[in-house]
Length: 316
Image 1: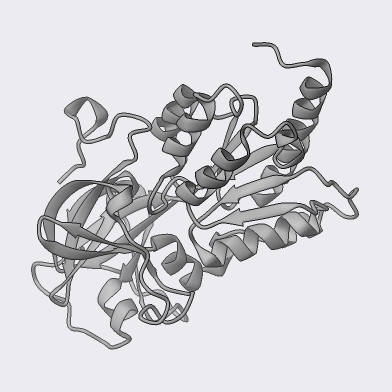
Image 2: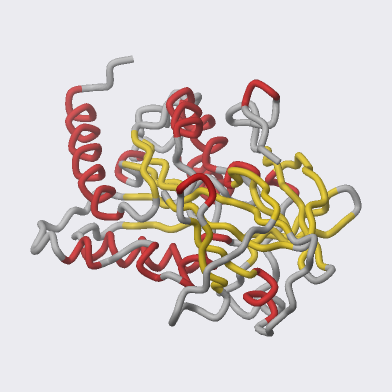
């Protein structure tokens, strides 16, 4: 079962703060994934085991001459060996420039909802700050846990996510006190991004848990005469509860006081279609999340350009 393309109406109008959630079941529980991450749904195939791999990695299979790793979600979520069902399906995903298939028991349709209706689970109920849930959504009367697939893959394959070593290889860098705002809902990635930027010499990095929190702060300072002493650049994720990165980008670029501030979309979802959406909204750069070294170089360039424009007056 192929995912529909944009002309068939499955992808959303840009900047509306909505998300398409594909619901699926694992051991009777409802879970969800952003449709933008899904390449296709496939019947399960024979999987070749991978020696010395993570317990939740079944192995790999090779449809159409492409090796794809298979992760057993029942095993990952419950920590026990579960006999595979005859009607199981593979949800084939593409994010962070990786193709990964997740074994699920069934697919239960697609719901379109606002990011505002997605709530972050309470830390006390979500095993502290390291929850594997991006949020909890109510879809057609059902409570659906939207899984943080980036975190799942990062735990299973740490080398696939942000590598602070990329920044360390750059050697000694000058201190840069330009104020940077980051909107990122994953606590794990917040730490990785902040650590990487601090090691790269950026001393004023301010983190927000989602686009709404970042927008609330920007709204509070946008009429301040010293606004550009408080922000020189914004880095934003795309998938976030309350307000996503595309909506945040649209709001900033539509505001006469904020539109000059450069925006970098830093997301696992950067592909050709998402890049077109971001460009349409006015994003200055769009990078895939593992590219932390590239992000540092982009920040250097955009901050220098912004500060030069600030000195000479913005061209409206």
